[in-house]
Image (cartoon, rainbow, N blue to C red; front, top):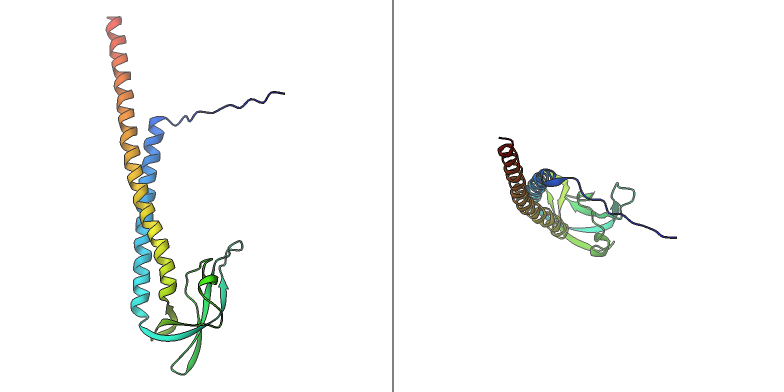
Length: 174
């Protein structure tokens, strides 16, 4: 029994590549803007959370995603004689290795809203995500522009060749 495989060619052509390159640039800009927005949010939280406390990890909160192994530590700490339990909004699968239940860590809280916390250890994880978004966005923009230029050259060359063929055809009819 003989099995044959066939390859299908992409029918997008240079115009499809032009459109694809524009989409890449738009996505790259969106990634870059999203990373800037996230960095600004993190800076705002860090600015508000300026009171240092020692907090104990009392457990982990799992991400709402049912198939995710991402967690965030649940911290317990005392501020102005009251005990608080709080967590950050950052989830990662590496936090189970980084934080240990029962161990004490230094965190910063917002004195006006003691539930809001900032942890340098968790912020490092955010910085990695921000770098990936930022540099991924830059790469998409660069690749999109390069792809756009090459596709545009191809479109112009094809257009020129078609124009030349039409002019030759019309000259022959005369």
